[in-house]
Length: 314
Figure 1 (tube, rainbow, N blue to C red):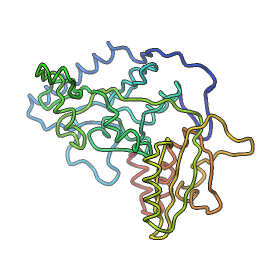
Figure 2: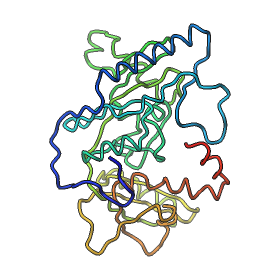
Figure 3: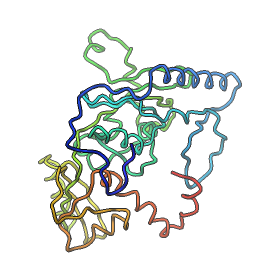
Figure 4: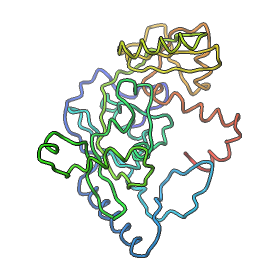
């Protein structure tokens, strides 16, 4: 299911029955995993250096080595457990596709990084967060476990250390790799699939704008909001040494009768929030998640990036 900006494509009053929804069969995934292992071991036996072949690429530079390990088909949401609020997703899946799949069940990942083309495996191997991270942490902290293709051509399951692991001295969880993978940039292996936590959501986000001329007041207000933990989203933007805006977002099920939704596609988000006459606005949850994406587009005329971005999707 795909959601158009500014629109809500489902009946939010519909009751979602808590259950496990398998979107891709386990047999189909197992076949892909076996193929990836075969590819990897063949490349190793030929003495080749291994580089991932994927749909996305760096917009500023070409790769030094031609990619040869094709993992592009690891790009699906495998299942959504609406009862336990967990999505099982492949590493090359973009957050755009993950969000579309989970919104159909009134759920979303606990944090969604900016730019919809970022992949789940990529943000685990790197780092990523968003305005809900004050409550849930960075994206990799929402991943309960993952399957990793290692440099030996083996697939291992990695999860946090448990009390039973400590008591029985069991190494089966590969917890050391689980904790080391974030910010390792692919040096430990490639995430083939993972389980990621989801949250219940509402159709709209109510945004409150708090404006400050002093950095100390701005940061103290942010600290107060974080400590109160009443908001769903907290975000700060600095435009100059004397211009700071704190955005407080809260889920809401209704739009005021006379209120129109903010649509970030109409102009860069950073411009829309600078209007001093606006202290409150509403935005669909979908548009809130991707509110900064248009800035990447509009910013191309500032940095002469229109060519690289059109030729090399992020």
